[in-house]
Image (cartoon, rainbow, N blue to C red; front, side, top):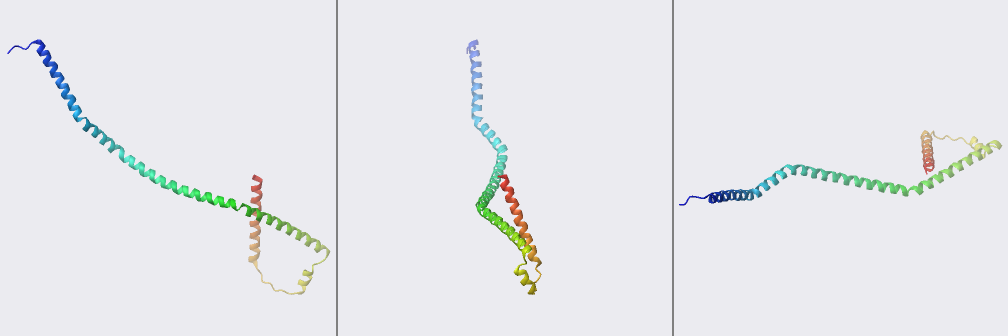
Length: 163
């Protein structure tokens, strides 16, 4: 055989380097999908549990939010029904005012009559003995009713002053 020449030696080293590079690239290309799948599996294994916990928490918060929304809707409907009762309260207020005025007129008339003459009822009742039972509950009920009416009037005055 003939002695290898410098050109042959150089060509042989270049071919050897090129084949090694091709072999290395083939190895990388052949193993690339498995490396990618390994990285994906590693990512999923690390990030999936917190994502599941977050999803469970979001579902729980969503249920709570729905409950609060139902509560708010119920409260809004209650407020709207109260607004519809406004005319009734105004009517009651006017009736209480007229009853108060009528009572004051009766007191004034009674005081005028008391000065001029004694009433027929008082003269008649002095001659008729009546044993009426003592009803302390009635006095308490009247006092309580009067207190309620006064507080309602004060609230009405306060609300009218604000508007």
